Length: 292
Image 1: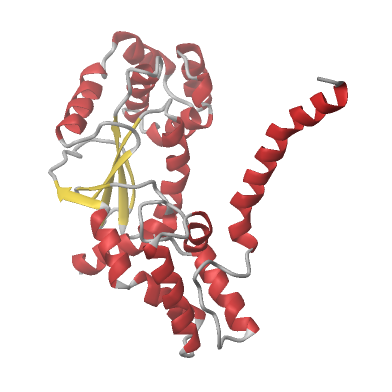
Image 2 (image 1 turned 180 degrees about the horizontal axis):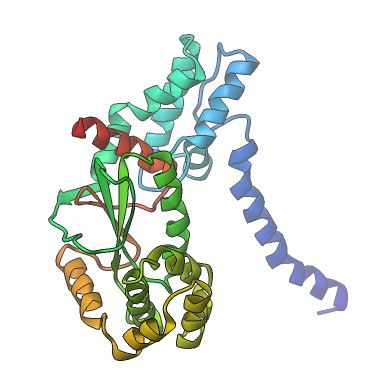
């Protein structure tokens, strides 16, 4: 193979990657979606419909936005129905806010939200680290691992949820260190040792921000930076004082169906999806409505 053909041959994988990347981004800029009839809509209304479909979640289990699902999975009946509903609502003179409300309150989305919550189970939250509302109407229990990359992402998103509902939601943290993460057990015990000194959440944030650097030396450094009583903290960590409590959290999690991290329970009902504020909001609003 000559040099020119060799160079072209080497370009194929790069071109394929570029094409895939462009296709993935296409739904954010597409002005037409498969099987979506926007006839009778003004340019402003079409733009509003597309914006809504790019931001609202699909009712299927794909985890995509409606527009994204229409582009990537045009055979999906859920995204097709939601897209058609949005166009019809806009054609009927509804405002963008009303169109969004219609999609979120549709039977399709209600069924999806119901499917995301498991049966209610009893969870022991006494003494566990918690933050948020002092008199909550919703309690979110999180089983988490400080070395889990998905837990690190979820930690930031759950803070956004707490900011949205400062007077209604309380977050409770339960330890669930995985065997596949070599320092997760140590981190869990250290977090509880910090909790005993009222510093759980500062160390929680520090460890998630530096999850790849978790080890005993760094944990001691972070604890010192956070102003803990280091004699007490080091002794608690070294002695394994909180090993039994970590084991209790693990056993409780396994008993209620936790098999990976992060796993969240909303008022005792397991949430079977990734933590996303726009996905959680209608579920939380419904829980608040029921609580009233």
